[in-house]
Length: 307
Image (cartoon, helix red, strand yellow):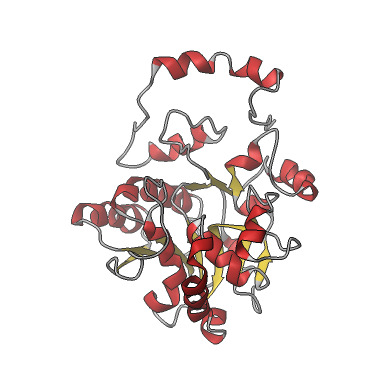
């Protein structure tokens, strides 16, 4: 088997979460050679040493850093007080950043943990496709289709986990097409590069089983995915490979009640950030006591039972 190539886009504030994600990845993929590619505007020496220690010293794998500055993304659509960093756009520039001999990569957000082998994902045949991705947890909201000029028959995908065919991108001029669409439609962008990738690649995408990107909203009693996906998600949420803490409430925050938060804490405690937990607030702690009743009354969209 060839080397699995993993790409992450980060900034300084996400270094601990990247380290935790990589720990979960490498812990569950010890039997394969893995190369990690970190793309950032810039990182401190402390940050790079922390990630290098995890990848090279603990797991005996390889890591590369690409410091590209912020010129290419600083003027791209973004929103004040947004919890998503501008570095997210770097995944659109991978053919311009990574070595030309890399044919494909798995892109991973950092608000993720990996619970099993990525070999089946890596071995997925995506010849003829630009990317392989999973349905977005809000795919049933068709407002994005009209905003991006998409036919409602297209499935909107989540960009937090992508199997990217870099050869296809180069052969089919994907990067110039992304830039061209953005230049003419930047006022349509709401979900950053996820909107951009969907707008340009909607009919060049292979859709993956939900186990490869089990997003927070898929674990809820009331979902916003397509109704036709309900049965598959119910089945795959019990044995997911990739857990994606998508949305505003992250596992390092008190308000995150995701049923996989304990697993995130487990991998946290395997790193130098062992014991990192959010500060407790009495008001929220007291409010949590009423959540089961709120769930029964339909006042709150709680989580499904995983058992």
